[in-house]
Image 1 (cartoon, rainbow over the protein chains, first blue to last red):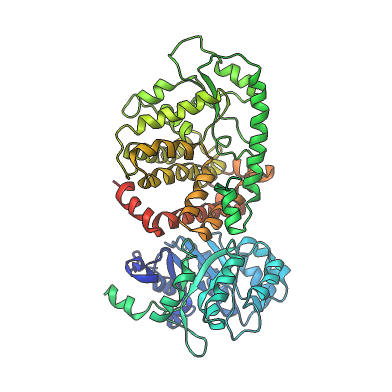
Image 2 (image 1 turned 90 degrees about the horizontal axis):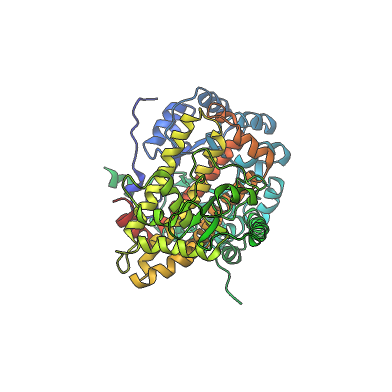
Length: 237
Length: 329
């Protein structure tokens, strides 16, 4: 990693992106997939405060563990790791995730990949359950998430606002999720979704649509799951 | 029926429960009652008060809390004033006063009132004055204690203005918080790290609650005319710090962050009340802290607590203005 980082002052932006603390998921930077020092530099260019180190595929996890074991000097005050959601063995992945340094505050889990909660219990308070979108068969609503938290009573909650919107554009589900799990809320995933459910930069209409529910999350880190929107990028230059 | 305020009011407003906070409060009240009964049969000077501070003042007594106390006199200074510190310690069945001697001598209200600022305001004098204001409860001389706290407030409020947080008090409060933080490092160097883990944990949560519990009511003075501030602050500071914090969140309609902020503190009190965990923290050195899962959790709870308070201070437009205008310069 370079001695100095190009740190993007996200808090200079207006609107929702003026939230502090805020940062980005390394999953956004597909060109550098697997190249952790480069991914960290990319993330720092957005924010040096918050980062989510994304190992969505099981084959990314060993490289991430090795990178963090090398004890890189990182500027982030809040670090999460997105646990694998594909191409992984449950026990092996948990074994690896337990080796993460304590500086990694949260390990984000998709509830639909948890087949044996007792295995994931080893993550204790670092386990964070994310609500799923309309493409998934479970882990989407309060009723579907309750048993997940019963299996992982120490787990936190990662509120993906766009996922909630995909199921209920009125945002009632979003409020219901916060009503039920607000004590557990650890961080927010923020983006818009395209027609196929992929994360895309936050659209102006979604910024307005999400503002009310996000006003309930002012004290927790927000992780962008897509690049900051163009309006914001142009305001930086 | 009076409307619930403080932590209890937040529980009603949110549906959340803070079992450890409330358990600690009940334990504190029960033990205070026992100590008050012990003092009730003693004949001490009528201008005296025995005042408990620290976790007692915060109503957060756990199984192994220390007895931090001061013997306060509101009248003229004299040599034969009673109770002596040792008499009070015997009745409290308390450990000997701490080695820094903040609580090791009789305290004279006139020192707290007349020695604010400059060299004469020693570290100990500042600490006693701030603890009297921010986290104190009496087991003897209840009226003396309440009048003393009000007298200190009056001293700070002599030159305050309508609808503005009182700067004299605010500056001393901020000075005290920064002094705590600087003294932590200094003490740890002198003690070669002895007790580092527990003290660090308390700095992250208990001391921060002490500061925030004073800061928020002082900032809220923007709502009051000058002639109403004394009554407001006197009533607010009679509450425990967590109740003041909970009320600030509730007043500014920040219920969600409040639940997480108080939730973090609640878990922390649960840790302090667990003898094994408390011992682990107490014996933890800075060198071993990186491998302690418990300490990592305490750090997280401290961050959650701080983020919640910062969200209140910086995301509420009324408070944000006062923070900008009064807290930096």
